[in-house]
Image (cartoon, rainbow, N blue to C red; front, side, top):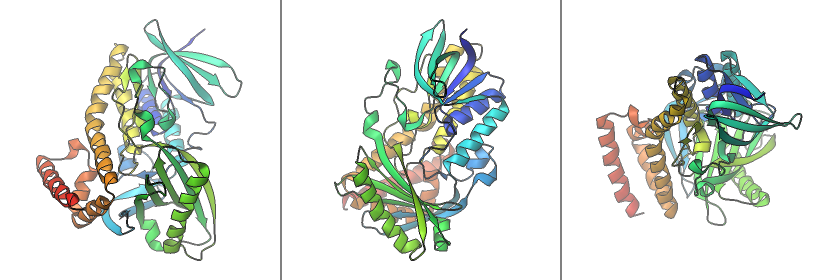
Length: 398
C-alpha cells in the first residue's frame, strides 16, 4: 500500500529540520527524506550564525563555538576594514543540522536517512514523492498533502515546470574549505573575528573567501562563481590560506582537512511554490550574495512553510500560495538588492574598498543592514537612502 502522510520534507538541513519540527509539533504527520546517512556530515559551510540565532529558533546555546563581535572585511587590495556588531556566532553544520534534526524527531517527525529523491508527481489531489532507499536499493513512494524541498544548492527542480529557473546555474559557486587543526591556539584576535575577503582569481573571476573560528579548528575557505577545476581551486585556496597563516598562526604546527561543495550566490527563484509543492532555503536561492549567509533564511523559510501547511490543514491546496506570499515578501526584495550590489561591485573592484570604508566609519549603517526589512523603522530607511546616495557618489569616482 502507498504510504500516506500530511507533510513530506526533502532534505534535513536548517530549512528542512525547522519545517519538520514546527509541523510535527503542531500535530502534522511529517516525514523527512535525507539522502546522507548522517545528518549534516557532508555540509561544507563556514557556519556563521547571526546574532540571537539560537534564541530565534529555540536552539541550545551549547552548539555555539565562538562569539565573534568583530567582522573584518578585506577589499580587493587586501586592506582590512573592521566592523563591530552582534556578536555573531560560529558552529559546524554537523552540530547545527544534527541538533535541529534531533529536535524535529523529538517533536514527532520521522527522519528517514539514506533516502534519495527521484521524482514527484500529482495524483488524486496529493503529491506522490518517489525516492530510493540507498541502504536496500529499493524504490519507494509516499503520498503527501504538501511537499517542502530543502536540498540546498544541489536541488534539481527542472522536472517541475512551475519551479524551473533558467538562471539557477549562473548563481552556483564552486567552493573548497580547509579545516585547520592547530597544535596550540592561533592569535587571540582570530577567535573574535569573522573574516570575509573579496578579490579576483587568476582568471579574473570574483572570489569570496573566509576565515571563521571554531572550537577546535579554523575554517578557511573560498568560493568562485561557476566551475573551476579541483587543481586550480586548491591552488587558489593554498595561496589564500598561506596569507591567513602568516597573520594568525605563523610557526604553529597544524593538520588540515579539505572539503568541497556547491554553494549558491545568485538571484532567488522567481517561483518558490506550485500546487502542493514548496521550495525553501538555498534550494529557493534564499542566500545573501554579499556574504554567502543563508542559514537564517533557510531556517526561517522552513518555519514559514510549516506554518502555511498548518494554517491550511483543512484546505491543503492553499498552503503553497500562502507560503510563497509570506516568504517572497520577507526575503525576495532584500536578497535581489544584495545580488545587484555584488554585480555593481564586481564591475569595478575598487568599489569594495569604498563600501567597506563607509561601513567601518558608520556603525549605525552596519547595524541597520543586518536587520530585515520589517525590523527597520521609517527613520532607518531614510538613513539607508542617504547612505546609499553617498556611496553611489563616492563609488562613481572609484
